[in-house]
Image (cartoon, rainbow, N blue to C red; front, top):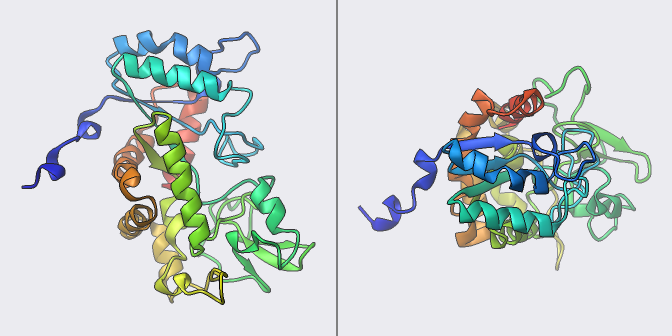
Length: 297
């Protein structure tokens, strides 16, 4: 057996502690948990035997879905601190022998994300194809994810007269994984956080992330223009939403785009998805968010 198949398997026997920075420890007295507070408790977590911390979303957010509506993939929610606070937390965790992984939320953005604000300016907007648009509503799943809140996965944008895809809430437009520019951006997001010390990611909403990816999506519509998302083959939409067969496809997608840096991404997703189903050892808010995350995974 090749050494590369058996080396660096820390994630198989790690003691993983999942936490929500916002609800864990307030370090500056404003009533909201933050990275300074978390850093103060690293020794406590180390004494518990924790070897890997799994952070739930800590990015800037519109805060309408517990942080899963991201408005900036390259920063920290200002309520939780700064990038400097994050780096100090990472340095302290590494000093205690801990690895850190985080939720990777790239199936969708917030509708307040600058990418979507640019995309909805018009059909010819430069970032229009970063999202999934149709003149008429596309195929619907057998059941929407949040039936008490949504009755469709398509929402009309009055400004352009087209409908955009949202697998979850209407304020979370899906990114177009058929667009190579989007996949390249995901690669940059992975690289950015791994350069700051993350050991890997728990990939959010994998079945939704890849449900519309097919060989046809890579074909260009013209010079310099990425393809729009096509309707999935018959039965693919429902099959992808049911889960497991789609996970390997996600691994291939991310490895192709991110190369070596994506090596741990899907392996950690499989491991951490099971942990999410059991719930993190944190408080009630963290357990509720993990239950929702497990449903997405």
